Length: 90
Image (cartoon, rainbow, N blue to C red; front, top):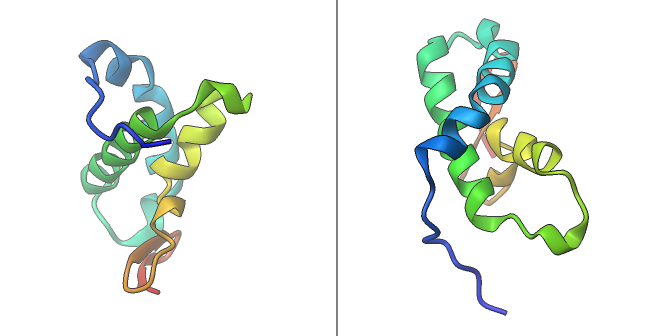
C-alpha cells in the first residue's frame, strides 16, 4: 500500500482542529520557544496527520493527530523533538 502524502488539506479541516493545535502548543509554552512558533509546528503536524490518517485502524483522529501535533512523529535519527523545556536533538 502506498501512502498518499499529497491529499488536499482544506481550510475547513485546519479550522476544525485549530483548538486542538492551540491546546497542545499551550502545554509547551514554558519551553522557551514563542507560542506562535509552537502553533506553526503544530499545524505542520496536523497536516501530516491528515495526510497519513487511516480510518480503518479504528483510532480517533484527535488521538492520532495529537501525536503529530506534539512532535512525536519526528522520532527519527537526527531529528529534533519538542519537549516541555525546549527542542532536543535525538
